[in-house]
Length: 255
Image (cartoon, rainbow, N blue to C red; front, side):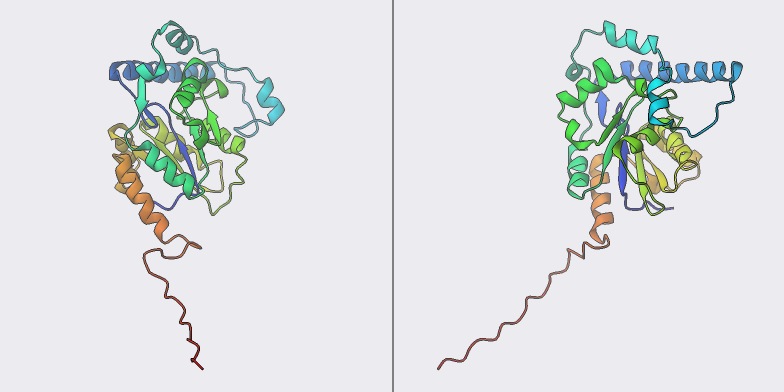
């Protein structure tokens, strides 16, 4: 299955929108997140309550629900002494892709397993990313992190997106969990949710799920070129590669 032109795009943050200058720190954070997810699954299995209803609660239920405490994540960001621009930097070419999608009128959101307070919010402000995203979802906003699709569904909810069968939603991420979350979201939406792998880790997941290599994009330069091709013949926009003939104007005969 080849990539289709997106109508909505949801980005991951760490490793996708920004990259860690210290790759060892990123590795530690990802491992802690994976470990936390496995532990939470174990306790849900051990103390299962048989919850019913949609994966995204109603607004009132969502506000009153018990939020995760996230002790390990908060401890890491509490004790760090460096500013975010000393820890991460924007991924090369990301602004080119963001500007292109914004110009095309494609709604965008960010859904991350990282904390917002003291980290993600600071990144958005420091690198002028706030204006691109109609919704930003961080770890403290959801009860279940990726690979659970709750963050993606909540992002769409907060964007006010009226998702229909004709929508194609890209989720761009750099990890296995991003690919799995996108595929899982298809069970809850009428639209098509498409994982787009940015980097080797997510690329492995794409191949494991028997998806086309077209879902793998190794750089934002490649992604920008791919998007230009997809939007060139977009319905209603015409073919910009062909020059429209100018109307002939009859000259008045001189008296």
